[in-house]
Length: 207
Ligand code: GAR
Image 1 (cartoon, rainbow, N blue to C red):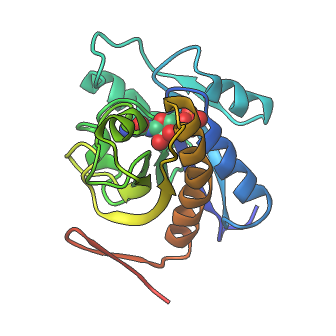
Image 2: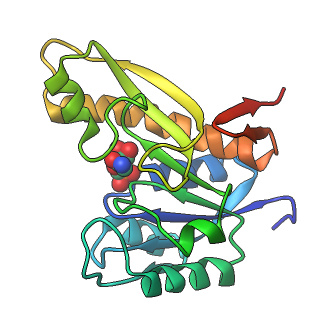
């Protein structure tokens, strides 16, 4: 393993298709990095299974008394796991809780999230359903740095996805996920190459 490789930690709560996209981008050399550890707040999340199948350490941290966040003690556990694995960048790949202290401060400026809408439209849960219900013609995905707000951090990349007349929540989410699987690895690649320069809410992509 080269010392030039970015050491990535992935957090997720579900299927882990975005984690898979990161793993494949590392495999084919698109991302100069490797996934060192995967952590989930749900014991039976398939994302853990995906990691284990590849021999990547996979940890469940929980259970939590809350639905939308983790107790600080549990976030402390996450920080320890990520630090012990040498993680330099945390990718939230379908992690469905709001990141609080101490996790947020431990990886300030080193945590990315993928969200299934063109932020600032439709933050929060089931963004593709929100888009359908609102009747927009275009939605998409956003990769952004994580800050203390909900889906509010500096935007790195966005990709538009059309909403089609016959879309159901499932078909629209599927199409958004295709975009996510491109945008999230690409944002990680740019981070790994040191090409992201943040100035307040603005992210400049260096040539
Ligand atoms: C993705 O569509 C991701 O954008 C969304 O959860 C899905 C996880 O899919 N995340 C959020 O809505 C966070 N606000 P995956 O587990 O197959 O990667």
